[in-house]
Length: 378
Image (tube, rainbow, N blue to C red; front, side):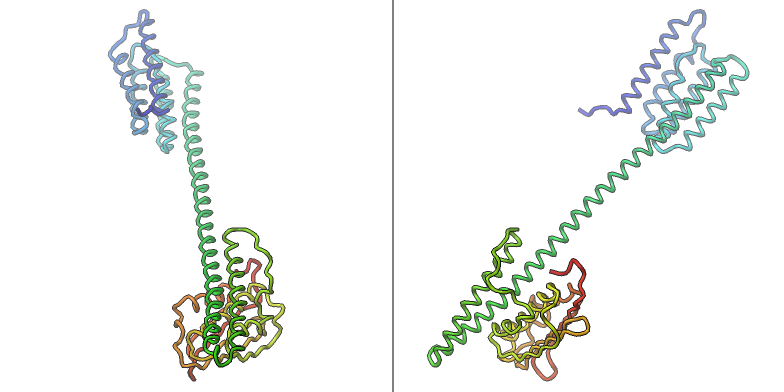
């Protein structure tokens, strides 16, 4: 069962009090004789009070008319004066402040004119008191409306702030998933590709040159061990636990020779500028771009030779990996390999271009700025 609202309860209390006051006045009438206005107008005014929530202005006007006629023509002096205060408050509280002020002023003016001649129902002090109560009722209604509006605004701002926090959390989670996926792709794709190349070399030279097969198998063992270590480190981010410190130095531009040797390719390296003081985020991105580019050479170029150029000058690192193989043009920028490299370069404010060379083969060129913001890219 639906409970009545506070406003309805207030209306019923006022109606009961008003009608009870009229009944008491009727019982104590003395020599005064009631007429039709004494009986009808209190009921009409109290009925109008029940409409004040849905029709605040209409209820206000009706109550004011009923009260004005009652105190002008009724035989008894019942307590209907309380009804205008309630309807004035309701009109102001519902946003009809101008109507409440206009009707209230008209009622005070009419009461003053009516009391200037004829039967006096109020003296001067009571007249001023009633006028003050009407002003107070209007002011109180305006204050309660403003307070509700303020609370709604505060609640709305709180909801918007909570929504913004949720959106920010979702965005950060999405970026972190993308970063981890990119790390897994680079680590697994590069190292497993290198193991495949070394395994093929071992199978090819097992009979003719067993010493080369042993070297290739040892390289596969080391690469698989390093792959597992990097995989544990990456997954440790998801578990939010500390992993043991790596048993070997992490790949970096300062160890580019080891990175090239692990590729299984014949790589001609051209280095320019210092590579041992590169910001960590730039160093990691550069290593991943080089690893992915050499992996693509192994997979798609149809050659075992490549050229790697690294130039540290003018505030940025330039990386160029190219080959002259007859193979396909990799994934033509639509796969995860080139896409991941572009994302890494773009996240650092750099650029990456990849495409076939006019003279044959494929080229990847990346420019990574060294001046990074404090929050850096991952």
